[in-house]
Image 1 (cartoon, rainbow, N blue to C red):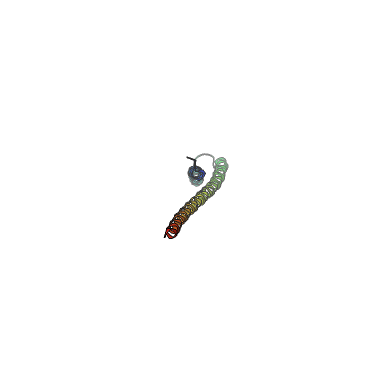
Image 2 (image 1 turned 90 degrees about the vertical axis):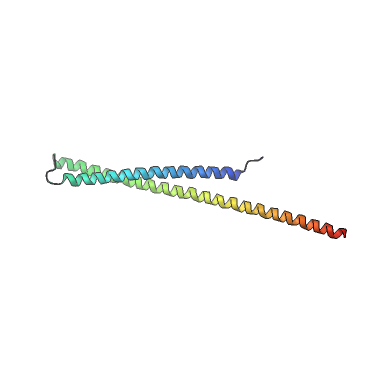
Length: 133
């Protein structure tokens, strides 16, 4: 029996969608971690600036601001990565839906062809019966 190329393509599309979902999950995890790091850096700046903070505030402030900026850039990159992963998943799902529609159209065409064939057999049998009479 011949293999159905659309079935193979559907299997490939499902695998691609699963991979896109996995990538989106990883991107979301990185985004949450980056946002937490940004919040922690901002909180550390606020806590260190209060009276009674320890150490040399001037030196620490430069490092704290740099860490906050780094964390914010990382969060921005993570947000972009998440958006790209979301778009990738959308494209994969659209390809899956298009293939589903193609399979449905093919099944409908096969069904119509079978109905036409059945009708042609009935018409032929009726014509033979009329000729015999």
